[in-house]
Length: 277
Image 1 (tube, rainbow, N blue to C red):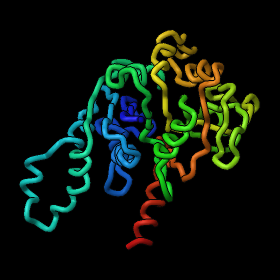
Image 2 (cartoon, rainbow, N blue to C red):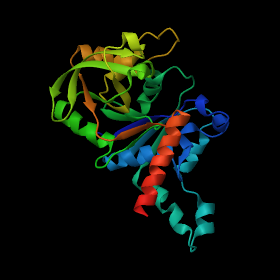
Image 3 (cartoon, one colour):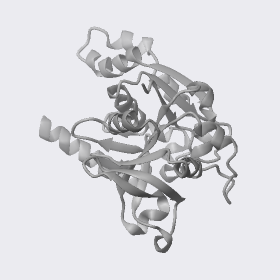
Image 4 (cartoon, rainbow, N blue to C red):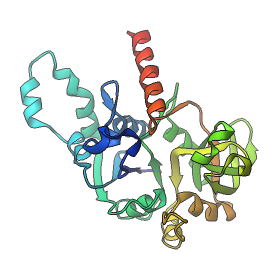
């Protein structure tokens, strides 16, 4: 059973400066809801109640958001606006939030390793909030937990991206093992290859199930040329042992780490809101 979800949330969000100078990028709203709240709701819908968040300096707003606001609640109590807080209060009631600070920004692998004290020795989910996914049925975390339950090893969610964008992602190589569920036995991975060097266009997105041995692997991974520890390199070691499955998820993803993707997500959810109104 997957009980914990790790949220790496220490990044600077430089592509959204100056907005992210004082506001964490994970707290940027799509309509009236912060990106990170969408992620927590996705984890909750998968039956996960322990949210482990890796933060950094200037991220206090994250902790405040997932905490009671007695003054605001008192001010709105008994008014027509009281329902505006109902959704977030339900999340706070259902979830346990734990936090650790990443003191240096040294890559996603380092962020995940920083979260080890919050996870312990058990398999766990990882969710990157700026990859916002909208699914007709089960969320992506629910989908990959189902794959994990079947194969009992690390699982990465993938999607096909344009070839000219492979340099923005970790790209997997693998053998199709179940056509009905679009699952692949991963044989290799390459981190952010140029188009001419990419083996294909199957890109890892910000949803993972990781087995706890990943922490020991990360501790022994050599930093890349930029001094960062990449989760792709750790997963590659697991893949060589036959312990990584890639799953082409069902749903639509928005790269909300980019201004263009953020605008696309806002328009998408606004249109759905107007259709359902």
